[in-house]
Every structure is written in structure tokens, then in C-alpha cells.
Image (cartoon, rainbow, N blue to C red):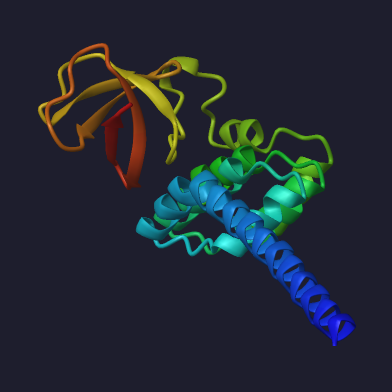
Length: 209
């Protein structure tokens, strides 16, 4: 009888130990998922609000494959805002192949504005061949020979500085280009650092960062 009681107690202790290990593993998994949620929440929300349709599993997958998630998401949002249909896989594949994704997207946007036929496949092939697609498009429309008239190719996520008070309209500088912008929300002071959050034709919306 004594041996039976010891056996039952041993089984009970073993079950408790297994349950404890199981609960610890579950807690670790939940913690990891929560940290990943925090890590990618802002990017996911930006994509969601811009109708770019980038899912959390895609963000985690890119992170595991050592892909710059911010580059891919911002490039996709930029493409969506100007009516380009590019998938997350398209952008990621070109990134993994060693391509300059933002440069290619900007080149296609500029080509589209100037009614120059340039497909994603053509642009990525040129890029992987070591050619600067954006400069070639600029050259094709004659902007490289006249730097002062060079048309800026501004996209979602670009960071610049307000050169006037934005209340809400004003001007901001992005690299060498000064353009008309609309501030998001309250008045933005002169000299403030701003980020582009929307580009619709000639309308550029920024927020203070």
C-alpha cells in the first residue's frame, strides 16, 4: 500500500512538472509573439491605413529572411498611392536579388508621370544589370541636363524640413527640392522635421516627426 501511494505521488509530481514546463513554453511563445507585434505594429498600421495590404506573417517572414521590412513596406505604400500594382513578393524578391527597390519604384513613378512605358520587369532587369534606372528615366525626359529644373520624385516616408510655417499649407525641403506641402493636424513650425505620409498627384501631405 505504501509503495502504491509513493507511485501515485511520483506520477502526480511528474504530471505537475510536465504541466509547468508546458506553461513556461506557452508563456515564452506568447511573449515572443507580443514582442514581434510591438516591433512591426507601426509598419503594419501604416500599410493598413494606406491600403497596401501587408500582413503580419509577411512582415515576420521578411524579418526572418533578413529583409529590410521598412524598405519593402514604404515602397509598396508609395506604389499603391500612385496606382501601381506591385505585390509584397515582387518587392521582396527584387530586394533579395540585390536590387535597389526604392530607386526602381521611383523610376517607374517618374516614367508613369511622363507617359514613358516602363514595366516592373524591365525596370528590375535594368537595375540588376547595374544601371541606375532613375537616372536613365530622368535622362530620357531631359531633366539631367537641367539640374535646376530636375523634377523631384517624392514618396511616402521621405523625410525633410519645413521651410515655412505649415498652417496647414506651406513649403518643405526634401534634399535639393523645395515643394508645396500640406501639414497633417495642427500647425507645424518652420524648421520642423517632417515626413511624407501621402502623395496624390501634386498634393503632398506631411506630418511632424
